[in-house]
Length: 289
Image (cartoon, rainbow, N blue to C red; front, side, top):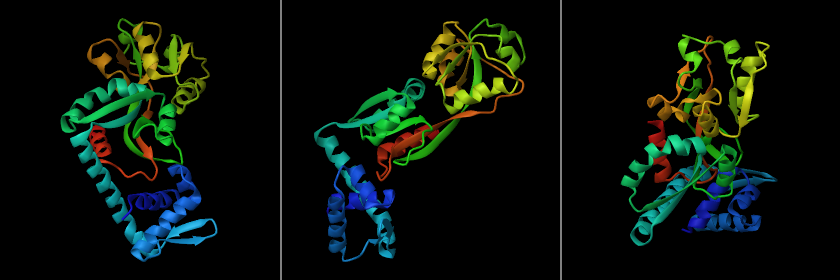
């Protein structure tokens, strides 16, 4: 059984059309059709119902789908095993900067212990940049803040609460709780202009008729955190971004009245139609932990 035919079948199932599958596989539509027809001839069954631009699985196609997924996954795992013997396997991971700085260092040692011959290449950037790399097949999968796109599958890993963080000796540390009015009187550092998180913070001030004292706006939370560490202002940041700084008393969370109830969602993303691998399973389990 030709593995490329199996792959074409799964792409058509996931994307819902031969044209979209051809685009994702960088093939022509007739090439994808030929692969499906070859698979149908080999098994003497009809896999798809075709009516104009609409494509749907037949009853036998529905039955075959989970088996095809297992075949492709087994093939990938076998290929990985052979590559372990002969050449190092390179796994390319895309990650948002804050995740690569604050989360992955706690996971990668365990990964290298389990997959000793796998060579990891880590590409970092803004979540939108990593999304594009996943779509363009520049990385095997990505770990980013939530980004929606029709060409990817996404799995929610966790929701990370946002809080107000200040440097040591800040006057807010003498208060039990602070209000949004209090925050408006101090230099504020915001990240990721136009994002849902940015809009939420602005809404806090807008609801009170307050103009925030924005000292700087930057394009990522790591830069915002470092500016707070330098004493240039205060910032609303997710918990994973400041975990080490809190442990070493370099940054402190300030309680607010009323409490802020918002999160940054962290997702695991991969190209639609691509079967999950043992590597994806490992990272998902560790991130959930």
